[in-house]
Amino acid sequence: MRIGILGGTFDPIHFGHIRPALEIKSQLNLDSVWLMPNHIPPHKTSTVVSTKQRQAMVELVCQEYSEFELCDIEARRSGPSYLLTTLEELHRLYPEHEFYFLIGTDSLVSLPSWYQWQSLFDLCHFVVSARNGWQLTSDMPVFKQYEQRLTSLDQHKSQKSGLIFQVNITPQAYSSTHIRQQLALGLSPTEAVPSRVLKFIAEKNLYQTPA
Image (cartoon, rainbow, N blue to C red; front, side, top):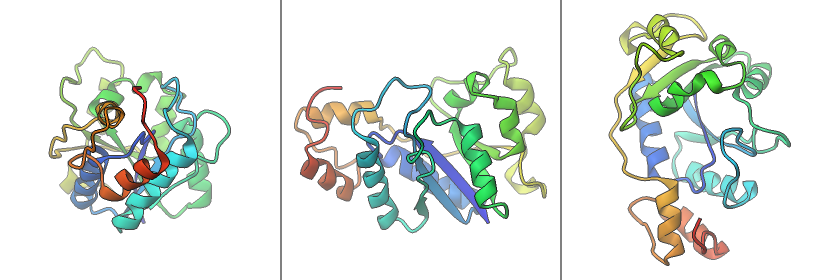
């Protein structure tokens, strides 16, 4: 099976995560997209709500959208969520699967700072979507890998890892930070967050203070 992986803190999960992932699933004809909440993200200092609460919000999205499945492999981990460790474990559990890691240009630019980043190409493909204000240039350490591995969607080679796909998605003007600010002000960002998630946030009194 061809599995997309979208990792993140999902603090909270919102349509800026959901809609691009749905578009990418369709463009690449993926069998499923696994939403993978981090436990201790190595590139962020902390999350606002607990891992259990963030996972519960992701589960609500998976119940609403059949295209998604929850992957709790990182949420169950006691240490930092390094992608290399995660992919190695996924390959042990699902050796028949082909994994596509969904990433924005902003994260691709920082990829050389990730743990053993060049080894990641042995374990997955990367699907890159544009981010406003971010552009890949030839002086960046990741540029050579990008140039060598870039493959068009209609020329998908029969290999299980190592390719980069550039996709066009509909821009989504939502961020978790802004959503948390709205919630702290007592607002309900219905245009940005699924109703089931908003209901959970209200029931649990989450994001009541500015963060």
